[in-house]
Amino acid sequence: MRSTVAALVLLLCSGLPSWGQGAGPERVRLTWENDLLAGSDGHYTNGAAVALSGRLLRSALPAAFHVDDSEWELTLAQQIYTPEDTSTHALVREDRPYAGFTFLRFGTTRRSRALSLQDRITLTLGVVGPTSGGEAAHRLAHDVVNAKPAKGWTHQLRDEPTLGLSYALSHRLVRARVAMVEADVSAGAEVALGNATTHAEVSATLRIGLSVPDEFADATPTPIRCYLTASARARAVAYDIFLDGNLLRSGGHHVERRALVAELSVGLTVVLSDSVTFTYVHTYRTPQFSGQRAGDQFGSLSLVFAW
Image 1 (cartoon, rainbow, N blue to C red):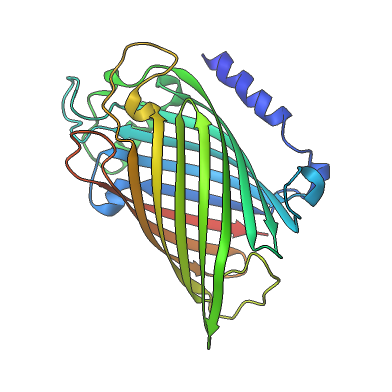
Image 2: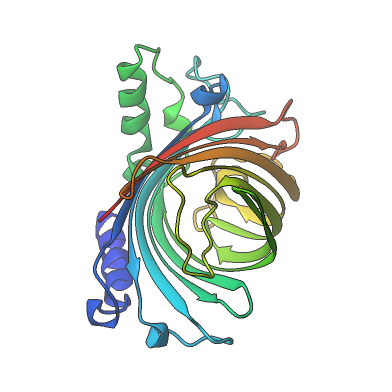
């Protein structure tokens, strides 16, 4: 299994645009997501990611519209899922499986200023199961906060390499400014195919505050830069390995997935300096499987360092 994962990583890296087609890394983003930030424990219980990003030449990838700006991003991340009751060694049949997911994701974002249009293509290679290190990371996190360890990891999903491809398109509908307050509204859609998740979704996002970034213009920021974000998304899910269980390996625990899921998120972004940005986002997600008593909530903290 480890040799399989190594081969997938090499395949991804061999397909990346060369550094000659753009600039080297210009930003690093550190993200931590945890349901404890929302006062709960279970289901999507932890996520951690580090992402590097930089500019890419407009001609690096073909596009259906004129591209003014293009960026790349490379992310290494891990996600951990558990049932709500982690105090028993027995299989919790009515709740979601234990699962760890470690992945490498490469994405490109392209923008058209004239159309206020942006698209994103991502390729994700990863592994689900013991090889992902989810159990070890979960135990370490519980040790750090002096919490009791989860006892049911023997029932986690089996090892399985994952491959995913997604395409997202978003359009800024309106942008307005009143005195120092700026706001914009955008709508988007995404399609994702793969053996980790296959889904389609639509979304809408509102941003309002001081010096809201304008990705489609060269704007001069104000001295105070902070803004609020509110977003909603509806997702039609055809397959989710963290609910449906392993695809390439038979057997194992699974639950009855719900085909439609909605998310609501609110966040605050504060630009601390030209090189440091802080963001907190709180997300509510409707129940994802039959028998789930209530929706899930989790918080997300991120720091971006630019140079």
